[in-house]
Length: 124
Ligand SMILES: [Zn+2]
Image (cartoon, rainbow, N blue to C red; front, side):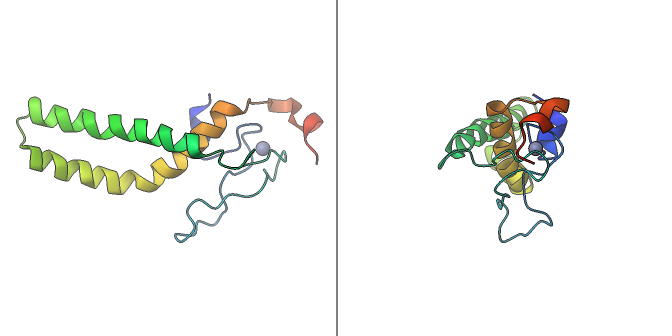
């Protein structure tokens, strides 16, 4: 697991290629290349591969929203509505990061880093 390359959506196999199409298009936030431009790692190994990423984002967002929400209510005596409002703001701000990040995390969980050996196995 390499947090920096997950955060920057780098290919898990070589950590050099990009997992998402650049430049960023707001209408297609999840547009991915078919394969990594650097090591030819396939970005969607099988149909429905990223269903698993949805569950990851559920879990991550659950913690991300629940912990600050409950902390504010119980420790700082915010009302539930105030805390909900803040959680909503966090949700909107983090939506895209979470959407892409959970895909990146998922692919990183499934595919091992091959470092300098990567060219030996790559098709290019
Ligand atoms: Zn790669």
